[in-house]
Length: 136
Image (cartoon, rainbow, N blue to C red):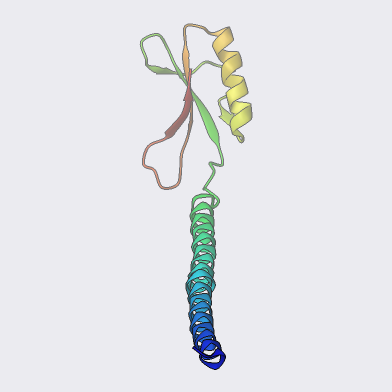
C-alpha cells in the first residue's frame, strides 16, 4: 500500500466519523432540547392558564356566596314557660334592633328566670314563619 491510499482511507473514515458525530449531535439537540422545550413551554403556559382559571372560578364562587344577605331589621325574644307555651312577662324588653344586644339580654333573662326558655327570632322577608336564631 502506498501512502496516498492510506491517507485517502483515513480521510474517508474521518468524514464518516464526522458525519455520524454531527448527525448524532443534531439528534441530541432535537430530542434533548428542541422538542422537550416546545412541550415544556406549552405545558407551562397551559398550567398558568389552568391556575389562573381556577383562581377566577373560586373568586366568582366566593363573590356569589359572600354577597350581602338581607339582615333582619328587628329581633324579638319569645318567652316559653315550663310547659313550652308562649308567655309575656310584664316589664321585660323583647324587641331589639341588633342581634348582639338581643342575645345579651336573653342570657341575662335566662339567669333571672331559669325555669323559662327563650328564643331569639326574627321575621325574614322571604319566610312565612319567624326564623329562630338562638334558643336557650
